[in-house]
Image (tube, helix red, strand yellow):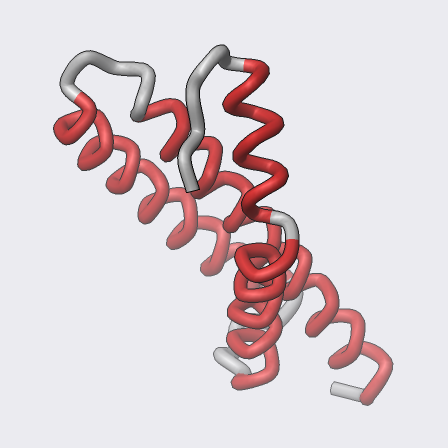
Length: 105
């Protein structure tokens, strides 16, 4: 792969990681709405893991041409870390207000 394609794939993987972070927060907030929070959390964690697995495999097949490259994994992890460090708390608070839930840090 040339450098431009690798850069595009890295950025795409970072955006994927960021979206996985958003989905994690949304599923966690959704699990809090149920009466049996612990059981709902286990179910939503399972759903999250399956969605991450399918998304990662598709990312590797489509963008990585079927090969596991370290920069793709690094991009996805970096995107998720940047999301959780920077905007996770405001996103949780926004969606908690939308769902009439109390979010505590």
